[in-house]
Image 1: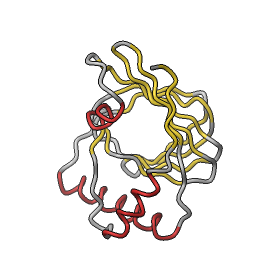
Image 2: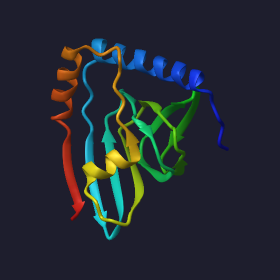
Image 3: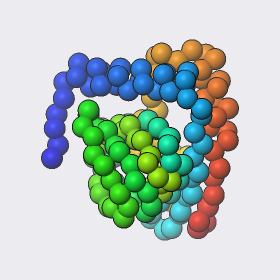
Image 4: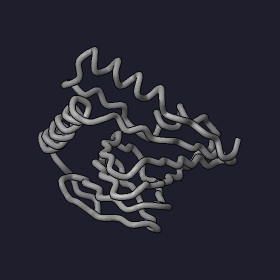
Length: 159
């Protein structure tokens, strides 16, 4: 079911998530994810893997797409509502979704996106998610995040 929210409501939700994201950066050990990219003609898949006991904030998703939780157990908060998921599970992400995840077990989550022009994963991520600048982050925070992101291991399942 698609709900509509006023700009003020969306802004308040994002402010809360931004505050959590800043607290995470200041107080938690950085969690490292692993990304595996799958490119086939007309379809892009991304397999995200992360360890139990970690907390995550996602980018805002811009397009509807399918996902499958292949492994793990986690709680997911979207718009202040918590849902517990346990693999195997499949679902659909709606546009406008920005998630908070807590992983109870090592988790593998895979998304699938139409890719009729067979663009690469960097272009695809820019197309399907919105880069969000957290106004609470300092320049030092941004440098730290950049260093953390440079440690993300990328693998390719099919090229």
